[in-house]
Amino acid sequence: MKRLVSLLFHRVVLVGLFLIIQIAILVVMLLNFNNLFLPFYGVCFALSLFAVFWITGRSGEPAYKIAWIVPILIFPIFGGLFYLLFGGNKLSRRTRRKMEGLDRKMEEVLGPDFKADSLACVGEDAVHQARYLEHMAHCPVYSGTATEYYPVGELCFARMVEELKKAEHYIFVEYFIIEEGIMWDTILDILKEKVQEGLDVRVIYDDIGSMFTLPRDYARELEKRTGIRCCVFNPFVPVLSLRLNNRDHRKFLIIDGKVAFTGGINLADEYINEKVRFGHWKDSAIQVRGEAAWSMAVMFLTLWDYTREETTDFDAFRPREVPRVEGGGFVQPYTDNPLDEEAVGQAVYLNLINKARRYVYLTTPYLIVDDATNTALCIAAKSGVDVRIMTPHIPDKKVVFELTRAHYKPLLAAGVKIYEYTPGFVHAKNFAVDDMYGTVGTINLDYRSLFLHFENGVWLCGTPTVLDIKADFLSTLEQCHRVTLAECEALPWWRKALRAVLRIFAPLM
Image (cartoon, rainbow, N blue to C red; front, side):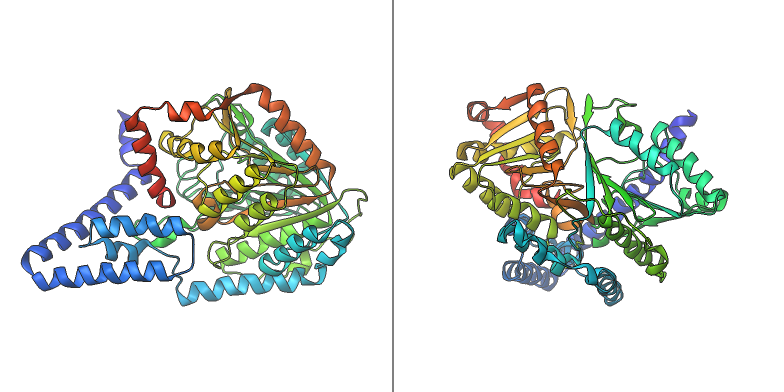
């Protein structure tokens, strides 16, 4: 009984109920106004018509436009109003100023490190990609950096603990999900010790990502109890707002600006297979050691200042000496900000696909591809490039899994090879291309990651790590089921119809 009461009064239930009430009131008001005032219906219809013309005239992803136009035409009374509330990516003047300040700070601090032209020894393709990330994401490319790839969360966790114990100046932690358990409790014990030693320890977590895993006032209590500075990104407010979509999906563990970790792994036990939910959890991560780790510290600090509304002296955190690592190729950590109208994550993926000559091996938990990415994958496969995609076989979200499978058929018809990881759930987000290029990060192949979330990744050029990603992919194929076009065509008609509908509304999910 006590557990039931606790569940009923959980803030997720209360917030969800409050939002449902707001939507119901809005719909009832609109319907009643329609019955009472014919002119109001005309205004709503005109508003919906205006919304359709506005959507078609804007730049952006075509599938996203269709996903909004269909419900607006079906529900002209309040479809346009709902688009004005939730559609697009509107910013208040205050938010826009903050975001512009974030970009300026990144460029101011990291601009002196820009050296994309140094990749001329590799080729023009590499120069163009590095230059794009420098100009549009303000993220430099580095040559004096080593990387280490981890094919499962357990290996990464062990290395995290080793490096955390060596910290001398500061530790920055930023994750979408933090959950109390073996993984977080182990890390937290070290963070507490380091605070006692006088280190600057800071933690950021996303409010929705950790809504089911941490108490409501966890950040405040953690800071009060331990001295670890902690803040929550975009606190969930039970008011209908587009801001609910913009989440911090980034994952950073940064130590002294010299060592950093990122990838698909969150700080929760399922990511290291200490808790089993969807079979074996297949994830990945990467360690960056050297000059590039400093740029990741800057990425953290800019979002920290944005969230806490502080002004940090970045030079106070710049490492005085960072040993160069030779022979590590080129490493370029990058971030993607959904509020600047530049889809950096999508651009990186498209560049990797379009520049491939021999193969593209990619791993993703969700294959909800936008039109541009779908076209690029199909053209690459039709051109003779060996395009292989690995997805989960055991879903974490059944509707999203059905939507992933809804995108199989056109890719398979074009010659793309798709494999499902039969032991469980794949959460890794990796690319390996032609033994030369790759990326490891947080960006899923879905609309939320590509267009709505704050994300990050590490672009790799000529590093030994690219071969490690490739080797992991090929060895994991032995545990996968290869999906065939015949399987998709043999589905019952209602399943095909369901997938067709899901594909239309994919950008809104």
